[in-house]
Amino acid sequence: MDFTLKQHPTLAKPEGPVLVCILDGWGENVSKDKFNGVFSANTPCSDALRDVPGRWRTILAHGTAVGLPSDADMGNSEVGHNALGAGQVIDQGASLVDKALESGSMFEGEGWQYVSENLPNGTLHLIGLLSDGGVHSRTDQLFGLIRGAVERGTKKIRVHILTDGRDVADGSSLKFVEELEGILKEVSGQCDAKIASGGGRMYVTMDRYEADWNIVKRGWDAHVLGEAPNKFTDAYTAVKTLRKEDSEKPVSDQWLEPFVIVDDAGAPVGTVEDGDAVVIFNFRADRVIELSKALEYKDFTAFDRVRVPQIKFAGMMQYDGDLKLPTNFLVPPPAISGVSGEFLVKNGLRTFVCSETQKFGHVTFFWNGNRSGYFDENLETYLEIPSDTVPFNEKPDMKAREIAAAGKEALRSGKFDQVRLNFANPDMVGHTGDLQATIHCCGLVDQCLKELLDVVDEVKGRFIVTSDHGNADDMVQRNKKTLEPLYEDGKPIPLTSHTLAPVPISIGGSGLPDDVKFKSDFEKAGLANVASTALNLMGYEAPPHMEPTLLA
Image 1: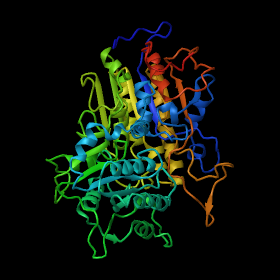
Image 2: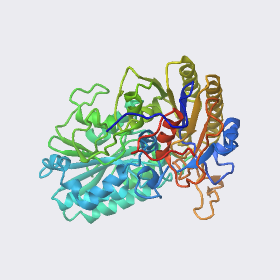
Image 3: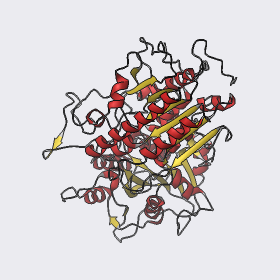
Image 4: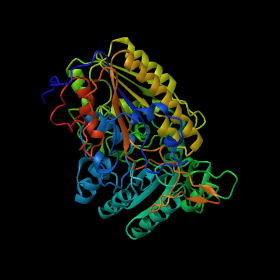
């Protein structure tokens, strides 16, 4: 690939840097009422950007626009940042798994051959998020994996479930458990198949970015060792009991305590033993990388594993290409080459990148095409600000002020051609379902954005401000036909998932000529069109393999 960037024929390089700012989880929703955290917040900066003729619009951030199977699939931060950074629409995890199941190639590749070496006599353990949300996993893919394994002679299966309540409606875990139990009953004539353990995704197993290894340890203890404070003889009773629906403080699916399923004698039905096989069935990487390390690495020190069974382990996909983690996987990862970050360094352009822990991987690893580390450490500066380790609605400011301060310093330094930032608040606080905390954080992020844009004007730079998907823009479950909010016992039912809303995008800055505006006839533009647009703002034509620019 030729990495040479050509000078833009009409838009010269600005005197100052280009700010690329991602307001994570900030959608532009059709439902503009008190449950829209973005609409309800005090956002004078964002409101002013919206009013600039020809320099504000929305772009698609879900479904086929970001490589997902259908337009019913919510976008997420991973596929969103892949599209933003690559400038390309790439078949993503869910699509790749669908194709591998449909064609049967999942069971023909090296990954399945590897784990199946232990299956004549060992147990196949399947660990992952039990959800049809399509963000980390999908139940139909798990069911296809179970049926395919049984068809190929697997005699014993144990499923270790993480309940969702974040990418899907809270309380839906009971429905998913019933569906899974139905599939396990379906194959029971050929295979001894049971649910063995579980817990809520935010409390058990699915930590990310090494924010809290205790979450992973709880999962290890339950899934591998068969140890948990809660023991039940069936999973439905476990989930229903741990939700405490009739108490003063019911528990969300995502925060369920770990549990283990035991037999009539009180012994766990599905510990992981020598000679077993383990497959993580999530296709999304970020929240299973830590468990993958615990399952795969011989030298592992994050917590005491107590017992390390000798197993054959594979992921649904390879979750980190640079770490080659896991070594074995059922579905090959998407090959993303020619991403914008690589073009920048190949042309000697300097980049500053900053976010807090919760989104740092998105503006680095995912932005760079699922690639860890730097393209060129001499030309790239990455700054990670450690996130708080408390529920984000308790501290909704998160690290917005620190990110803004770092961004302003980088803009003024004269050292960088592009400054890339991500504000995590609208997404992470939105996921808690706390409307007031979400409204607060959107207002704070807007304040931080205003400070940054003032500095962009000061240094005669340019900016592009957008998002990766919706979330904070709708905090209540709604009637799908009327969009009216849904209530239970007189209280609104919180929405904790992403939304299908498009996201706003704005351009500007004192270094941008007045006649530069968006195209007026580009209705179906999406996140993948942002990379070309950013390169144009830096004074370069976009490479031909990237999706076209939004600029007229």
